[in-house]
Length: 334
Image (cartoon, rainbow, N blue to C red; front, side, top):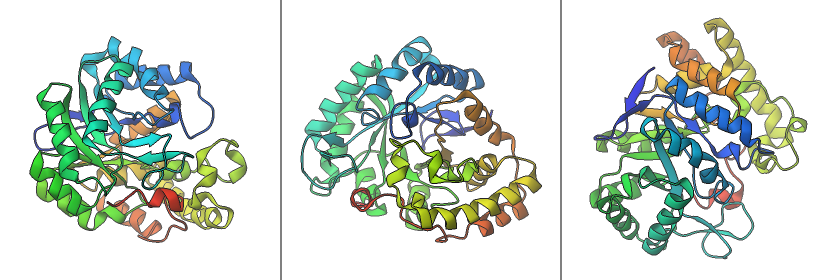
């Protein structure tokens, strides 16, 4: 099991973690029994970095994790997030009707207590600001998070989908251990200023959607495979014309993966791991078989030539369509 450190002072965790969102939210119907088996299997394999958020299923995902985390607390590095709320019409929107972004100090404290209660734990290992409202100074938010650290409710602080400038300002208030950003062969924006800033400050980059929301697995070949309630049906990259173009890129990745002797998903994850010791991918799944496939990517050692071929298979900027709807894109990069 390959392990990597979280930030400059955090513990070592599995190089590949487990994103838990899809167990309760966004990707079709839930199967709590299979999801619970997947969580236990992850820990059995040594995949101990579990990532959730209060917004995933509006608390349901944290409640799903709770029995497993409580039973095996010493084995888990637990990350959750706050900042996305429902029931108002403030700045932005998360793509969910009635949703808005709240990064105020008061909400940081209230949301943390609510997550601790749902998770049934005393301490969150890594607590992220999920999205930032630019009307709230980042210093206010991080000051509140620092108070949560001092109170023993949080061990380490993270940010998600912020700008390099915001990361610097936040880090000046309290050390930031991780920044969670979408990063994959399909999403390379972080390779500019964000990744350089993280490395200058000693901040880990936690890569979410590292297999392109399932596209890079090669398993999705048509929109017809997505359930009517699958959030991806609203994502521009899955629109008919864009999907056809993006599937051609997936075919190129599949060809390289075949030559390497691994699956397309494993090739995509191995490529990410090869970008640096500070990259921590968290592929999401609710099924044991996909978890095992993803975890096995840690055993795939790419040569420099193979890394280059994968990069060439999906040139930066080649993917058709934005990562989110227009409403979702308004909440990132602040």
